[in-house]
Length: 113
Image (cartoon, rainbow, N blue to C red; front, side, top):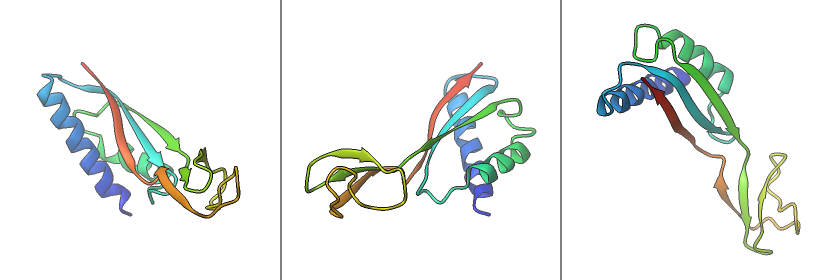
């Protein structure tokens, strides 16, 4: 389960940001997970609950925002969010798409004390 290594990296990042800002604890961690990222949100949450204990994130709430796939159509020049995993422009039906968002996982924000 690669979510374990992702959570360990996430907690390391939280500790680094807290240290840089002279914070004693993290109270909220907000991440964005793209539906094509390969990260399973429920497994990430389970791993976070396990690994946060004894860290600066011990009592921090984890907020997961799911990002749908956002594409740019090279044919009709429209930006759209895909409702299904069908890579077809919802405006014109073209397959000539560029993925703009939905493939990554990002640490979006932290609340520190």
